[in-house]
Length: 342
Image (tube, rainbow, N blue to C red):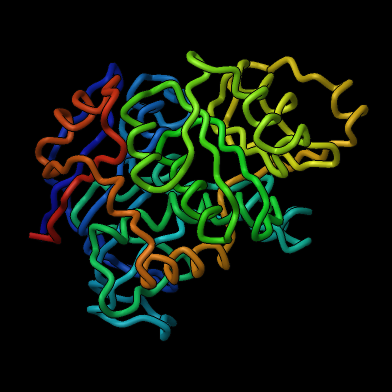
């Protein structure tokens, strides 16, 4: 039996090719993939920024949903037909972080879809411990957003955000928008800083106050709206130096900053402001199992994450999908629709 898989070949190129269908070994599960989301990391791969890590023969993709096709020996928790998503982290289990119960930041963490082959194939074989079952009634296209929503859930949990607090989200891409949605669900007042007018319009539709830093001084506006105090929590999701400048300017005394974005270059941080205002910063990397469970629950309860899905493409058109998404100012979340094994 064969399946179709999309291989990243370098130079912004993908090759869609037939490959043999793998069977699960002990402790593994084979999943017939239904949908795969393209995320910012996948775009970094497409641009060649991660070639040293992924090479030129990698099946990428990790935001996914599907059905269990087969289970290996010693797997009792899942059965063929179960609707599932994959939490794409494979920790070593023996490093200090793992032994301390923080396996999501394992010193030797393997990220499925980057360090190993990922979900852009008809049938994906993964360790059984990475699976989370979906409840009845959750559509598989929406379920493909469980992974990025779990990032947002983890970020908001790291912030210890409380009802009634003011949360400033810097950057309104898919993760920033999901953070805003989770923060709003907690009961916080959400302000979104974003230069993209299309994203600002989406924010307004979803009940967030949007501020364009090209049009207004965001820090001054936040201070004015909070009686001079500043935001209780700031999420830096932009990955830019202006975003780093804003996070310390807009946060209140003893406020919390959550660093969500990956900064390719060392940013200049106003450490005096940290001293002067006794600010706390939290790093937030990926997610833990409880974040996945909460994200699934929120989607099942009706969190409108489907509003972020802006286009869909079949696996055969993966090249077109990446080209269309690259630099598109109105796109948020692109899904690749995949069938099972042939």
